[in-house]
Image (cartoon, rainbow, N blue to C red):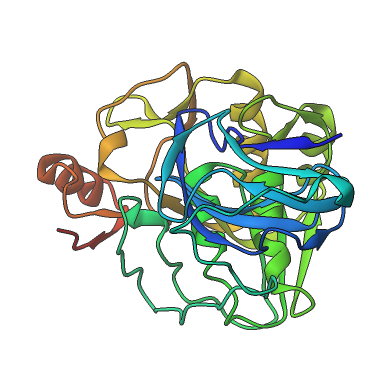
Length: 291
């Protein structure tokens, strides 16, 4: 019996994704959790694994097609069902799955996508330890850490962990465990909070749902906000990655009031008046030019 592979929810606000590359061709054998294809959203790029072991019977979506969350992407099943299944005419078979190429890092972020603040991280020294929270903006940044060797990275996010696994074994990745939140797939609760109270790191890469001058960085989840506060207390420097669409947005719980010793990386569409006010408060603001 065949099993359908569907487009998963890749973030709280993500409603669709684009198939960027098929890693398997019709007729190929695939193992359980073996990557089948790569997809891209406005928040994160990731691989979609096979839910079962078997043969790729049919590819239902072409490369570069955009489909909604929950849409069928492919059929995987018993080899006896392979006859008669065909790949879409204009879909080009992809080679066997390979480790994604790692983009060269930049000392300051250089954006090429709608998530400019997450396009590339500021340079980090070798043999350093850092924390990456589990949001989609910061997860996009995590894909660009490949050129930094001997890093130890701690995260409370499953999507972030998945992005970082491509950099193994040149990086040590630590996940906190805890209560797994739906949709965001981040760990919250007493376990990650206790972990970060005993942890000391160099940098924290952090994002949130919104940023205003009065309420600072805010998130809709009280549990998530509390974990982020323990992360902030555990590191020497906080780097906030915040695209311009989040400026002026206020959510439920305050995570951080940006001030001296904090760095903010955003894009050139951010409100100039807010950036000026943040600089006056001592925030180290970096703006990435985007079209």
